[in-house]
Image (tube, rainbow, N blue to C red):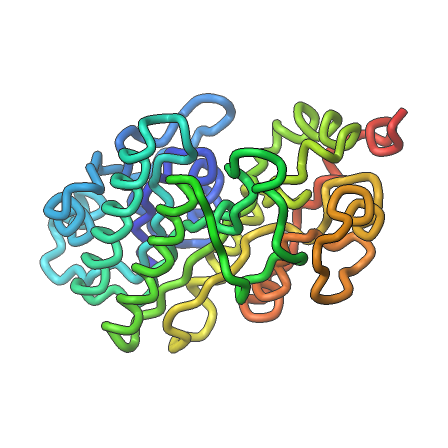
Length: 310
């Protein structure tokens, strides 16, 4: 497939682009900076510097040739898919109103242009933050309404970043309804973990599970997120708008799920029985609908002493 990926130079994109390329896809990266070539990332990808808050630039970039060779081909068709990950990645990078404005505007521009150009598969990055806990101000406000966190729950964020992601979902839903035959999937992405972050971050998280409450003790390996993205593109067409939690299978604690919920979420309504090691930010829908199969469990990247707490 010919895929336009926005934000391919960012934390997740640095792993998703190589994965998709290795699977035979042709890629164009729209970002403000090129794909990095350092830190063990030797790949290069076609790149167009694009301000996604500018609608004209977005329409032009999505209808652009990927390479100089393609530029000489007058019969080139539109891309097969767009994956939109570019965003201000959290609160406190810029003022709140700017976080909201940039994220909402860029998502609207990308989805609108893709639909009007006839692109039939669109994937947008939403976030675990829409469930309202990650950036809630104060422990009481961070409490979960219920567990596990599933796509059919009501969501009620209070920060500008999470609100921008919820608006992205509604924008996706609107355009999927307006353009029958276009599939637009929103991924509620968990805490993205790169390979080098396992030995750096997980020992502290395992020693103090309370640190991971706001993430529902869940994560997504950047490479498994890449698999989820591809499965969104290859699953059968005709689903219209869908939301998927994009997380790995297992809770990020030494203790089993029931013990963690009893200790840290006592009194929180539990809507179904969870598996012994099931992550409370549930990826059941991604597994059942998309066929996602985890390849990078956090345990395989830590030594036995860390796993045992010694």
